[in-house]
Image 1 (cartoon, rainbow, N blue to C red):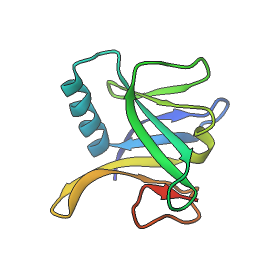
Image 2: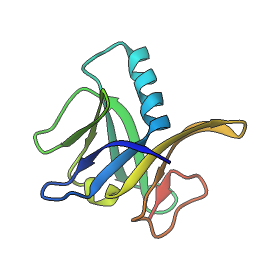
Image 3: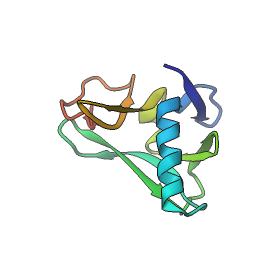
Length: 121
């Protein structure tokens, strides 16, 4: 699985979040369909879900002063500072197949995950 550009924590060379080529291509397609060049991909971790935390991904156009930014090709990826430690070393992937399509996050920090694939602890 090859990955594209990553975001990093301040003072760290370890990626906070990587995108596979498939994920980057799908995000680029969705951004193009939105037709707004000011949008970027925001990835966050929120309390909740079956296992304690859940992932949140959406297109956003508002940056906070302390947001961590990076790029994956032409895609801007933003992570808030509270979510960054929980996403450190994670990879965002996209699969499209007979069993369904969707994004998933492979998170090495998760001690357990839920069957839904959208929450972890």
